[in-house]
Length: 452
Image (cartoon, rainbow, N blue to C red; front, side, top):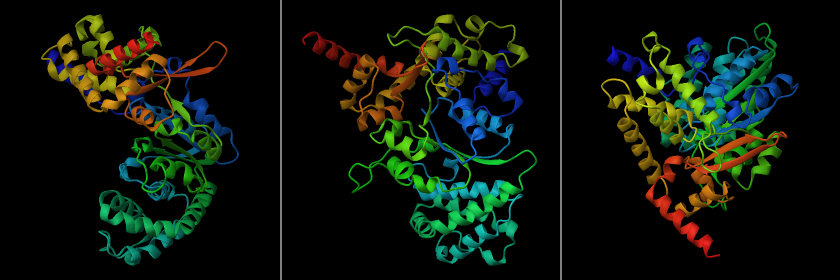
């Protein structure tokens, strides 16, 4: 019985986003009250539903905070309120480690075409592709004679183009050059396709919304010869006009480090709205004390997954599933409020037990491994910066701090004050605070303060 239950629980903790299925909805836990009153429906959804003109909005958060699950909630809300939604995971079509704005626009084109093809004629878009095909004759897709294919068979070729763009680095320059040179005609053809599609949407649908997920995973790099300009700046700010020329509502996810850069004001200016941020679940107060409401939300996530099975309903979470309440609390606090990390931690501990409950030793083992991973990601020069963040709960507007934010060594939190203010603050990942390097830097910091 125990082995069977362990296997069932293990698979319930697969670290995938919760989608729109009834089964997944039953596992969802509302966390807005411990995220500074965050609510994606109010922040993004109602702007789209209420607006008579297209909106181009940015959604931000740490990897693992639960953005994709929230975007599925947004999609569900929009579809119930007159919107035709095209959702896609951008990292399936672009190489996250080498991406340009052209890649994103091609991915948008591909998915809009595939999802809207039953409501609009794709002739102009496919004509654009046919006109480019001869210029791409040296690529891996050259064996296809596009002129001999029916329209239905030509539509998937945009997918082949993005697949080649992602999977064949040697072909990227040629594809990007062709797209860049002919960008204006591509966008014109795409918008004609969208405009006709709007007129023929299913009953009750009046708006088209594109959600481009996983662009937040693009790592920051400084572009050669551009005086400190990063790839994030280039894609989402310097080329923002192109990202906003598609004639429909769009939600782009962007890297969290970008909204803490010196160009933060420009982002709000060029997109009209400030980026909406999904903070971490608050599990500790600013003074380091445990924040029980946040921890209880994480425990609720575990409970819903464990008790999904009749085999487990009579078992006590803090005695029969976990060895004791202390180790459960330790596990929750050690995530820093990262949902995916919580799910991964629980699943991995199950590999180290033969029978329930989950032992203190198995939890400590997983936390130790994760602590070492975080430690290895910190450069020697950055320990003092981390200590400074832990003491001030603020970050400095410098690239090193943005990099630490991007790799989740620094986590962002939010609180709603009694007078309605949203207060943002920052802290170092709890596991990093346990390392010898952090403690040594902290002692040095305190000694320096005491001598002032």
